Length: 151
Image 1 (spheres, one colour):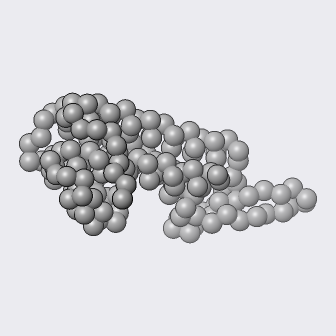
Image 2 (cartoon, rainbow, N blue to C red):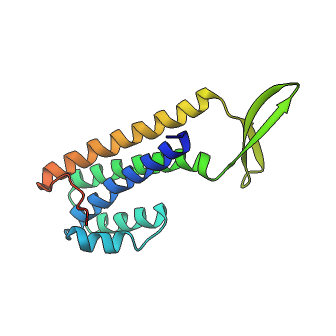
């Protein structure tokens, strides 16, 4: 799988932990939670949804765990955004090929190195681990299974 594919996959996996945390703190079934959570497209809107529930006075430990999950999802999304909202350009100067990442929003480009790609993957993978660990604690606390129901 390409680096971009891995970053997208990690972002999706992290978001699943956020969705399941939403199901727990909203005290709904997975079907109801899915209908509500996925009616919002952006991470910011989903984060706002969880924050609004947290503002109703959930347990402090739950709030800390949900905040950890949201931070991990944001971290994974930031890594995904670095590549998925940019264009790869090929440059060949004096027979020295290199790839540039052009960010249209910022009007800038920079050379993509193996280290940069590795760094993005590492941050993204760490975010998944962080989200997983926080969700596992939340799941165990509420005795809700760590599963995703597939239809």
